[in-house]
Image 1 (tube, protein in one colour):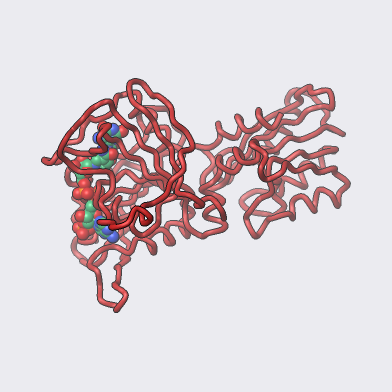
Image 2: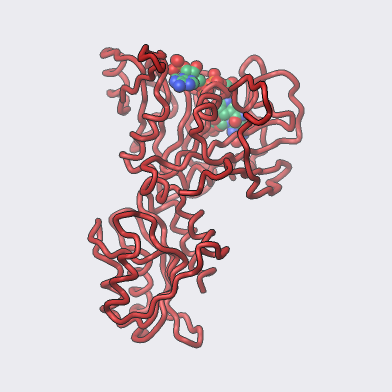
Length: 372
Ligand SMILES: NC(=O)C1=CN([C@@H]2O[C@H](COP(=O)(O)OP(=O)(O)OC[C@H]3O[C@@H](n4cnc5c(N)ncnc54)[C@H](OP(=O)(O)O)[C@@H]3O)[C@@H](O)[C@H]2O)C=CC1
Ligand SMILES: Nc1c(N[C@@H]2O[C@H](COP(=O)(O)O)[C@@H](O)[C@H]2O)[nH]c(=O)[nH]c1=O
């Protein structure tokens, strides 16, 4: 049942940010499903309430039934009322949860509230594969709650020899239409797509989700020290937030970009001795995005910004599409270093390798990054 609830939660993942997506199945002891649902858009009902409504719509009583949930039911008043109270009021007899909510404001209180109301509570062990899957599903939300910064996933489209652009800047297209559509599905689950001014000027990208259906477009974040983003750039799309992070103020350029719909944020970097770097402070940028309720950041940038993000230890996960091409000369994935010892290399752990069309999709996490 938790497996099915996880699938429901996955369906809500593009919809729910900044909330976590929770799947819920209400069933009898013999496994008959009475109702099911997943979290709707922010401000809308959570998975538990959707499942209770589904059961009511089907004419089922849920008194004494078991609710299988992918996350500890909430116990606080946020944009909606506490799910615990809704489950108790409906007469649910038992809750089986994949994991506790790591949000320090919630952790354990949902279970305590249910138990206090006489509901039996069972929680999977944190090492259970389904508990791990539940954590991965909402990793951006948990990151924001616990670390106060988003989960950063760097997407790269490269040739087999690791090149992301030719020396003249040309990079479209290295990967196949199937891999690009898959990339859009990953954009869709992110709260924001982050890029650098080099990519904006070279590619004129849109960085939206249009190759797969989506109920919501991610915001766009541009790292642009000198406010060089053209006000007529293709990434300005009606109704979508564009955040431009700059290192120095320029009132005239700021006005033009704000007129185009951007929010301009000054975020200058400093060397250890306090002198300005002239570049955007990337760690501060991520903290600021956390405060703006950004859960997952999907990076699609060139080798320079990618290099800074890796060098500063700000990347959690890599989503790399490898095309069956050799490009020889050109830009790599991330310019950092040079290292003199292999012990200084960023150690990763492959978490998934799949073929997408003619390309390979490799997912790798920086070792230890999900230990929070
Ligand atoms: N195959 C792929 O997956 C992709 C390929 N590309 C290709 O990459 C190329 C562009 O690469 P690139 O020029 O590196 O572009 P980037 O997108 O990496 O942007 C780099 C710029 O970001 C700005 N920046 C601001 N703060 C920082 C910081 N702290 N650290 C690093 N950079 C910072 C700098 O400009 P400033 O100082 O002015 O702010 C820098 O020049 C294009 O050819 C494009 O087609 C791009 C994306 C994906
Ligand atoms: N070249 C390359 C990619 N490049 C990325 O896609 C961006 C263009 O996005 P959009 O304007 O929304 O289509 C571009 O600026 C760069 O970030 N992506 C891929 O999946 N495969 C590829 O071969």
